[in-house]
Image 1 (cartoon, each protein chain N blue to C red):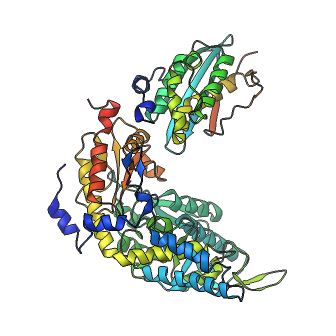
Image 2: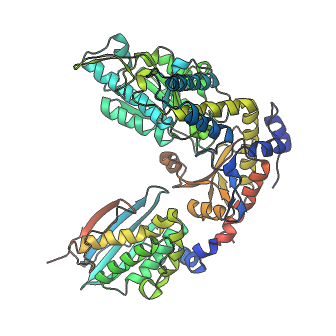
Image 3: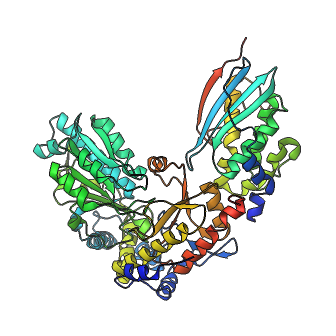
Length: 177
Length: 443
């Protein structure tokens, strides 16, 4: 497995572009969840903020610092999320996790994961799976705050954040009604 | 890359190891003869753990094949052989640090050693509070208002046990700060260490910066106020001749696996008499004299701290490791890794966009160097180097407060040992200079 398979050009591009990075002051009345995740191994950290309106993800923004993999992954997640319903976003997080845990046996599906499918090579580097998962676990934590009882469609209501990172989540604005 | 050969010649006194010597040594280390991603392995992560020579592997194997039995119990021949091997190992390792065998307690590693001291002192505090033990226990006990002093550059293993001891006893944890370059601020140490100080704990050499602590000065400050001195010798014991009694510290710890020994074995050194005064931490078999259903009497050190079945094979392996080190000579190893450390420091400094942490090139450091690559995260640096067969450590190296002080969340560390040649260092440096171009920064 070559280094190029891990650090594809699209990944390096995203790591520099950091799409969706920056958390502006908040004045929305929509349902917003925010989750901070830390990778204690390397000190990488990220805060992801998800805003949902009428069950659709209105925005997913983030702020963090970390390696090329974790930053690219957050950038890709931002691009993917804003086209989805909250339920679909959770399904994509599940698919992404499955790909990363596959030790190279599952190919990334661009239809499902967008640019994040290019992170499939990470699954061959177990030490880097946490890097790629960081933003996605944070997104999951943020979603959970907005819709605690959200049916993710696969019967597994409890997101398995503990496998990747310890969640330190904080609720900004609870869902109304 | 420019290298100051004159400096190297000076630093290499007494005669260190030539690359030819090292290539001979390398033959003893099976793990070094591997290709990683199709490249020759350049192992520069000995600060995390060292590779093992056949001599050590075979000693452990021979123990299991010919001597294995429980020690300090049983009357059969194998039990005698195992007990002899275990205690001979203690004598060998004690002599390596110029200590007496009864001053040396086996632990799992250095972390376990520091935890053992901290918990024993915590127990002394409880004993004193409940009126158990005499004057000696009352002297060892910590109470609210007492202080424990560490430094800002400690490995978490020499920080968190003291945080917990402070919590348990009501003592206050204070730290000697470092300056922007990572040097200990001795004038602050002088101010901090006072009559209220009960323990001063510090690393002999920093696992991140490679700098060597002013042991003599810190011991003097502690002695002046009657505080106990705990030395974390984890990074120094593998690299330099170490006479613990002459350093005048009360306790010291180190790990076997960083000095060619197996994992699961480490050493706690305690000044004669002091260990016997401390309450035990782990209690159970093999550490007692008389036991009733109500209470127990405890053996003197070292058995006092060695409850349960001990890591006998590992102790034998560590003894073999220090024999191997002594065979080459700690003076020569020290000289050799010092040269490698300087070569690392100079080479890293010469690469644009890479910042060396700790003492500048030319100033004392052991054979390791940590650095920050501007614009590239340490994880990515490590991954790139790995793809070229170069093994280094990335992350905060269990020293988050120090990294925070230096304005970093992570760094990359290359650490050399007796089996590294100058070619290894140069290969690493060549690989390192390719990192920023690869990730497209600093164009």
